[in-house]
Image 1: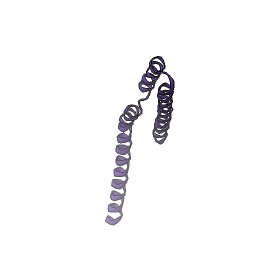
Image 2: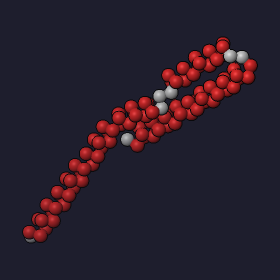
Image 3: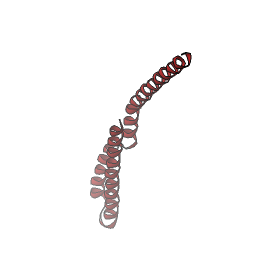
Image 4: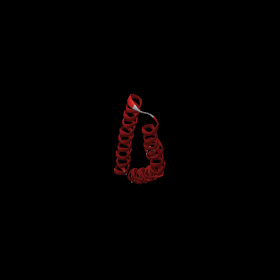
Length: 101
């Protein structure tokens, strides 16, 4: 009879430890969501850069002409496209993190 009682105690203790571990993991993940969101926003912060590029682009068009203006304009347009792609990657990463929770 003692053998069955010991097995039952071990079983209950193991299940209690599993539940405690699950709760701890869930709590850790929930705490990291905000940190991850802020990290992604900081890593992929493109809106202020995009606006600055637009301002620089308009100044290039005002102060340069000919080939220099055309080359600089193309370079800034490429940068804006890359920033938009980075913004899309950020949004996909953020959505992916949210779906995992």
